[in-house]
Amino acid sequence: MSADDQLVDVVVWTGRERAGLAQRVVERMAGAIHVVGAGGPDAAERDGLAKQLRCPSGDDFRKLLIDHHPAYVFVASCDGLREGDFAVAVGQGAVVLTVEPVASGLSEWATSRRRARALVGATATMDTATRESDVIELGRVIHVPAMVRSPGWLRATDPSEAVGRPRLIAMTSFGGREEWSLYGRLFDAWRSALAWGALPVTIDASLAGHGERVPEDIRDARGSMTAHGRLAEGCTVSVCASDASGGHTRRLEVVGEGGRLRVDDRGYSLVDARGRELDGFDPGVGAVPGLDELIAGQWRGLLDRRGGGDEGRRMVEECEVAACCLASLLSARTGDPERPGRLLELHGFA
Image (cartoon, rainbow, N blue to C red; front, side, top):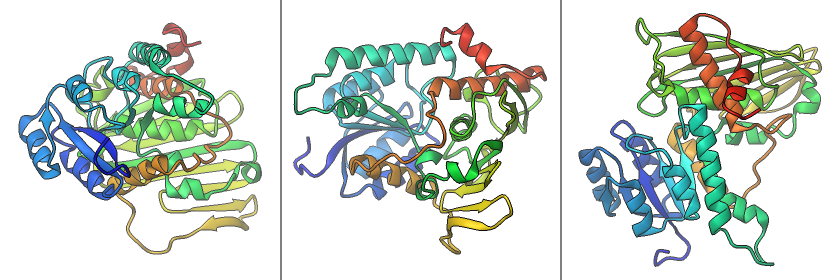
């Protein structure tokens, strides 16, 4: 631990594109964290960040963990990371905050989950004074900035009863790749949508702005994607994401039998089926918070042990989110609807 017991020790990992984002997040976390190491595969960006943060640097993720034993690891980019690195951090008791999804394939998701659970089980100790939730939190890999942890979402106090059974779920997420990849935005968008509806039976998607050929690895995808999901329970889902537009913005809208909910990063509105306002929070005219502000807000919430809030009508397994992202990419490549449930079955999740 650092000399000041009020601060938590942190290792920061970033690639070339995200060094600026990493530094801005750290600046916003001033007074709460102490950066003990900066790492990444690009020497110039890594060393420049370390100089700004006045901390050691290195290109070996696991060595940084061993040398500094951080309480938190902030991963702004997965560049230079190897399979199993997240599980190693979890096994050492660190909480990992990552801007990018931890894996690009369902086989990796399954392996990562097994390794993390095994390492936590082998290293975590409990006594009568230790709550189970503390151990679980120490073993978590947390995706940031999650829409389901945004100020707008957390202000919308349990709107599911007023909305009623969802009939339409629409999620949009736009911004630049220098802060968030298309995969990152898709992952967050599908997670937000799935909080309100079941796993789609089929997903039909298209990708524009990437070139003539859709890549096989979802981490290589870039441009703008639209995905349409068909649910068995009489609900439809639309997800639109882009890493090719300047300025971060995202919005979720849910149309149900009882009303309509609109949520963005700043506020929300809830109206009944006739359009009469039931509840809401309008922050007025102002700048949309950037990713650095949203990440820092979510991080401070974890440090303050604030409640997670209502994620909607159901808890979402991250393997389901990954399956929807991969089914979207596969559909964009084949031109046919794809089944995320079938992908889960093929990889032993169902």
